[in-house]
Image 1 (cartoon, rainbow, N blue to C red):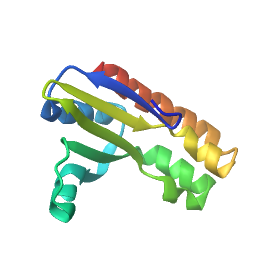
Image 2: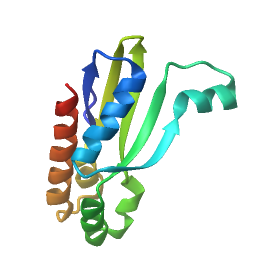
Image 3: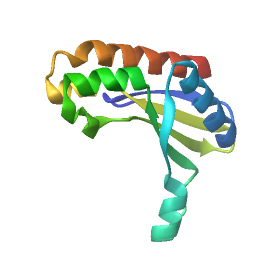
Image 4: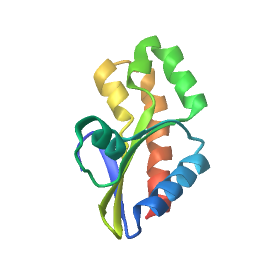
Length: 130
């Protein structure tokens, strides 16, 4: 995994992984504000086939509020993206952005506690999937 995200590989199909990911995020206080079906978009716009791939824009409102009050422009880095993508019929990868990126990119110290809490919650969500 990259230095800007964390991941877990699941031995399950794509549809189950998406449903389980939504549930795990909800258990940690995240709602899904946006959903981008990347595979469908690429098929429509470019007529190319990709394995099932969705980007879920996850938001924990109390954490988002704290981040925005610490740095108003942080909305450029929100919500936390969570990717669910099929590797094959029985294997799915779930990846979540590392909220520490907010601190690295902005160098706003007040974001450290928010990023740490968001990272812990996203990591807990991924752990429940494993």
